[in-house]
Figure 1 (cartoon, one colour):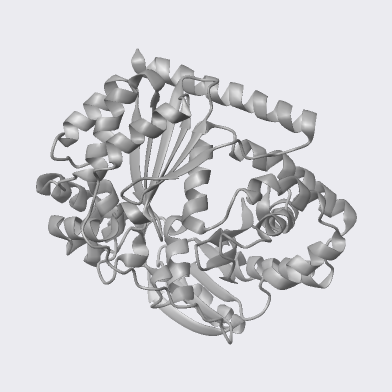
Figure 2: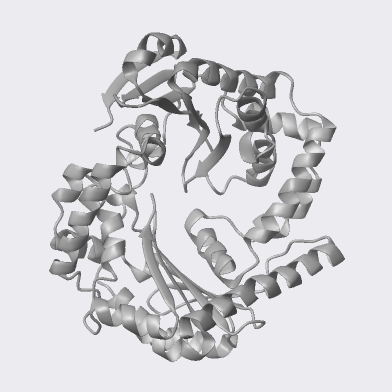
Length: 463
């Protein structure tokens, strides 16, 4: 019953927040970041507090500089360490954490990305005093229980074994590794079968002690609370989370651009279709032209009626979907055109994709096309930041990726201010055209001779 009550409350969040946000957008033609307060605890942890009193729910988002870039040769370590936070603590077993939160309809999850690890918690406002001690123990006192670790390790190895049967699920990892090589941005977040099999619970403990540091971490709290009271509560709860000496985190080396085009052909003998990515280096998340780039990408491959999807799916029937997107990190990023097609139409689909990317540069964008993309973006982005959870995640993203609320506050101005001249400038500066990098997963024997025309060919097995 309590779980159903929580789901009803969550639905109310979307309805009420969406109504309030859209009314504000219509009445003021604006998209603004709500007021929030930023404090720094005695232990150095940054905390953001954002009141949203319409619904009696609270969402907490915590981030730590503990992503896959710090795995070293132990690929998958950051991801398993993040999961291991919930394997039990000095106060609560894994079962007690799950049952205590499930009983009140609260949710907790942990994960790792390329650069950071993340904890999110959502719960009813009345359950704050139940949830906070559990969250504190998860952050402050994880024990990385060995039996729980070994169970998860075995499941993860099986997951990685099965992953080779789903090229769409692994092609981005192949692309990142091909693009970044030995640079840490090429580290696969989930690890490899060999690396994960070699990990131990002690590895998780050591990684936690090194990278889960309050002075480099942040928490955002959004929802139904009074700011001064929550400030005191958070300080009392987390101020005694103190670690030893802060270990210097290695500086990331710049990623060097490519001097020629390359192709990685990943063989899957039983494949009847080809998954492909075409791209290059992109932008970092703090890029001041981030929104303008999203407007242009909407036209190229960011929505169902994009140029790529129209030509590859609607007009030619080569695929069920084609898109382009920018993945962003703190110091770098990638741009890709992505699709899939039957083995026999692989070259045609790639050629069409390249033609469309070339058209973006040679013919540019006209007023009508740009206006459509601008309206699409203005309708889409406010919906991404309307709930307490989305706003809390936005605040921790600002901390992680070094951008500020001007991303929200100047959104309307930046979109409306785009004209054809600015659009074509953005295309020329940020959308790769030369020295493209190709990754294909498919039947190599049927593709090898044809794909060599795109550049220097590299091959490997999907295993």
